[in-house]
Image 1 (cartoon, rainbow, N blue to C red):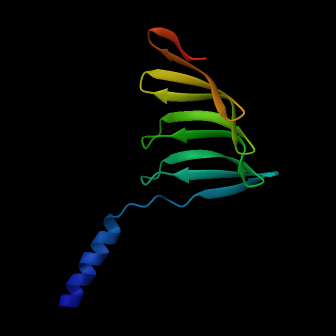
Image 2 (cartoon, one colour):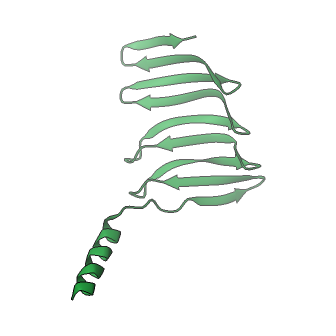
Image 3 (cartoon, rainbow, N blue to C red):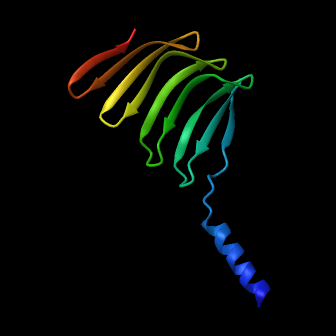
Length: 116
């Protein structure tokens, strides 16, 4: 009886522990597309690898499926304009040599330059 109770507790605990589905990797030409998931099965992020480094466009999503961020990598370094959604606001971050060069934020009241 003790072993049966232990087995039931163990199985209940395992079934309650949420695990994200395993990432999916797909070869596309010279690059590999990676898709990663939240525990609820929604896509967490998707993007490409080249020579084992983040490369090209990457997009990140919240658990509910809304877009959180989008930008580009060049052989592992952030480059160009990245966009971050935060509620009613949208932030544009310019990256040069993998470092933030400028931040601009938009909301329902207009544009605000945060940093140059």
